[in-house]
Length: 195
Image (cartoon, rainbow, N blue to C red; front, top):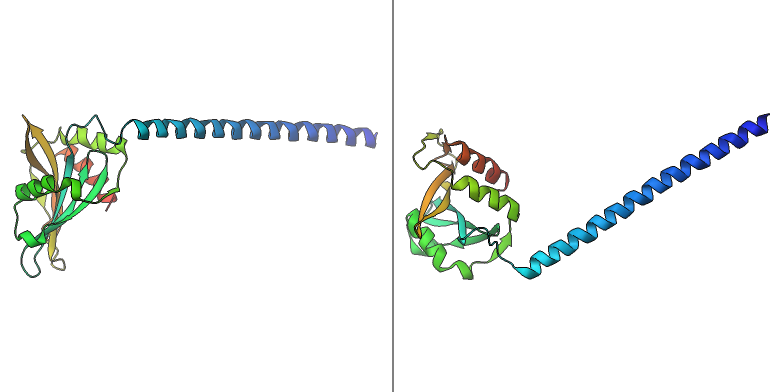
């Protein structure tokens, strides 16, 4: 009787092992299939176009850092419609208004080195939020941080009848400002994590 019980346990063990191995093979097969499909979709996307056709403007956000050491200078980065970050340094131009920084960024857009920053899905979501920001919404000015000598302000670039205008999203550093507008708050939360 002992041998019979042992044989039954061995058979049950083999059946369970084959079931587990079968499930693992199916899972691996499914994962490989998904990877191949995703890879081919990305290749099709990359080969068809390197630009985001949904967003009709090149520059979506401008981050301006004003440094006060040795005079006021402007440096920062822009985020383009593909979610790429392009650093700029206009320090040699002296003190520039935010609109002048945008103008200089537009002129030198093609010469600014870009690096991947956020996904196309994320930039599309941020773009939609940007166009919903209430341009008249107030800000809370936070206690100034005395240890910092600069302030960074992030602006969204909004076009109306072909004319660009800047919408302040938030500031941090010496003169920090937090937006009341919920769309601007969402943009701030996302971009603050990307620093």
